[in-house]
Image 1 (cartoon, rainbow, N blue to C red):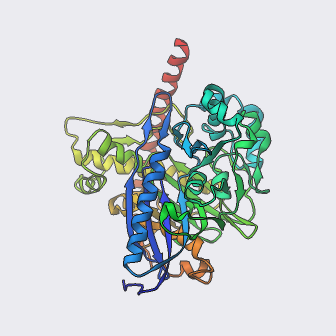
Image 2 (cartoon, rainbow, N blue to C red):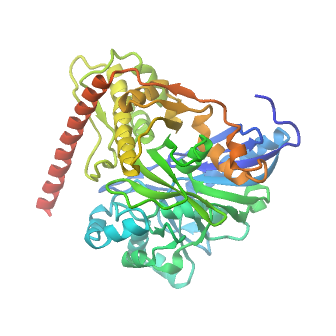
Image 3 (spheres, one colour):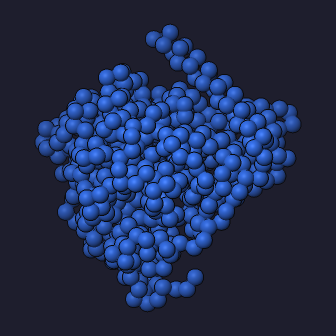
Length: 511
């Protein structure tokens, strides 16, 4: 790819995900260059607790951004604006006076409040589905904030002084990167919290109040594509506008070229998210684990999708490699999987933080079907195939909710770099998969497209037109073979559900 040239214009794109934060610069040719990556840690605890260090997210993001800025400067490109994509629904509480977090950030994977939220379901589920696009669920940053406020005297004193701030990761980063300490949240991110009225661009104040979270700590709602802030030179070394902040999976979809009604995308990150784009009219309430979301809002118009996800895909690989050392690296899993002698009786269920479909917080990850003849190659294939079948269930449920037949799926994210995995996913779904070049960096590219539309590119269509033609993975197994493996997978999931319910019963009996 040719160099963009001295004096060229560029967007600084930042992607603060769950397991890592990245920054790069994107020129008018749409190429993501000089990616700086900083790894982040997840801190799991007992009873569904999953937390992160908010200051680590901030400092690593700043470090990666400065590296990308330096690389752009070295290439002779000038940064015109900043774009943010971040993990969704992970929340931070901080003191505006000091700029310091008052508690560990609660991850979107956290399920500690599943039982308490379940108590709200009879009264609130239908009301919430009709307004915010999802039921009470098994996680809520508002309930978490209320809980911290009620039990931590320091947080209570901060609130009494009017300095307590709550926000998801884009809110936290905007506040710390901006020159004026702005406290805002964008539509796509607010929608992921379960406390945002989709059709009215406002908070669901009655629901948030029912959870005990005070209104005065909530950020002001803004559009995803707008002038959100100006960067502080003391932080990034430049003073430029931040023109977009959107959820990482949603930015990934745009970076893959999914911008039109009817398109289906699957972005593989820490978890794997499936979205069916439905246009600018809020969809009818879905059931089960499928939710209605805002993909982006600009110029007073929101775009919507139906979404579901598998919570542990990339994170499962990280845990298997760096957590327990079963494999050397995620790439090692793909290499070994190709050495396996086809399908076996060995299965891996990647439910490290519970099952999403069907929703069961007490489900746990497992290997089954092991024998003396089981090899590491068999385990590697089982890992990739288990993730592929989990994602297939997500695709099926999302398509059913959207009342659509899926003819192809656009894929991206880190795990999409694995050819063996994408072939297993194509075989499990029975649907062709399209992987545009640079799919691993799709969220960086998509966020830049949003911020640069009207600046580097005439519009979003012109930006997306820079994406080259995709690789295509077509199913290699027959419909009958696929049906057999799907039935076997269903039996494995049924067995895990029985164990999960047994664990919950035993726990209740001990209380």
